[in-house]
Amino acid sequence: MKIKNLSQLAKFLDSKIKESKNILIVSHTNPDPDCLFSQLSLYYILKYRYPNKNFILFNKDYNYQKDNLKIINNDLRLIVNSLSCRKDDIDLIIGIEITNEERFGLIKDLIDYNKIIIIDHHNSFSLKSCYYYLEANSESCSIIIFKLANYFNFKKDLKFKINILSGIIGDTVGFRYIINRKTFLILSQIFDEKIKVFFLIKQIFGFNFFELKKITKLIDQIKIYKKKKLLVIFLSKNNKFKKINSFLEYLRLIKEIEVIVLLKEKRGKIYGSLRSERVDVSQIAQKFNGGGHKNSAGFVSNLPVKKIINFILKEI
View 1 (spheres, rainbow, N blue to C red):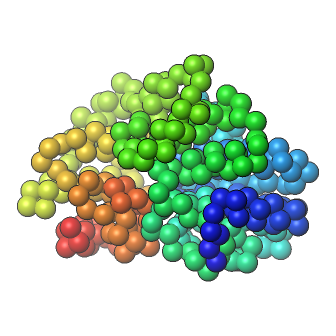
View 2 (tube, rainbow, N blue to C red):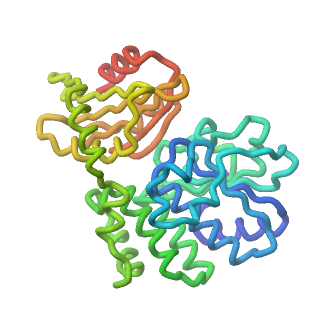
View 3 (cartoon, one colour):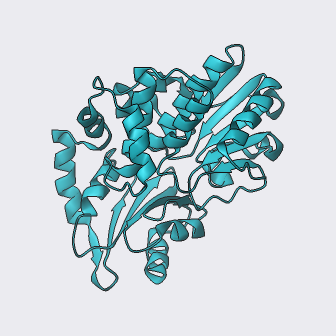
């Protein structure tokens, strides 16, 4: 049930929230900066607009204590990673970048499509049995939330602007992959001399000395499939590296490589991250019930690592 435009989304949110008491705002599993800051920014807008409503921020995989992004905004502590409520306790669920059911991270008993509104910008979106607003030409979900703030005449303080800017930085890798002219226009509206842009980029993508040592060890674990111009990194459950996705962005600069695959072992499953300039990796991620952008996507699988790699080799 598609919501056609931003105006319709705003009016639909208004009507649904007015008749709700407990509203769950959920961001996708294995969260990235854009989905987290979009989630928090939407909360700011809605809590200001509806102060008497109970908003719950949820992400199954989020751990505030271990997250470097809390330096940017410590309100990220409001995002919880466990719920004790029942289906009847939740009146409305607003999903941020939830492309399929698995990306909710919710137990199936809580998922009621009549109570769900999804806000997304991924072409791989597949949850069309619920209410959804899809803006596929938007380069980050934070941009959609910013435009929603404009529609509601929400006063954008410095904290809100930093949230939105951090989300855009995260999804465009420090503005490297912006291809939409409108994104620059929105950036001009967000710009504030008090915002230290390079500080945000360093917090999202930077490394410390300890992490730099880990990178030297990771380089030895890289496997290259020359004919396919594919680079693969596998991290076992005992080999953890928080900034691995940042490292992937540097690997994208290798001239001979066109597709990069990161496979991480976590909680008995394999978490995959895909990057490419040539291949539409969102199409590959969808085969594993994942999703994302044309150039950057992710998935979770129960398959062995070798089978995942062989499947990807056939797809590219």
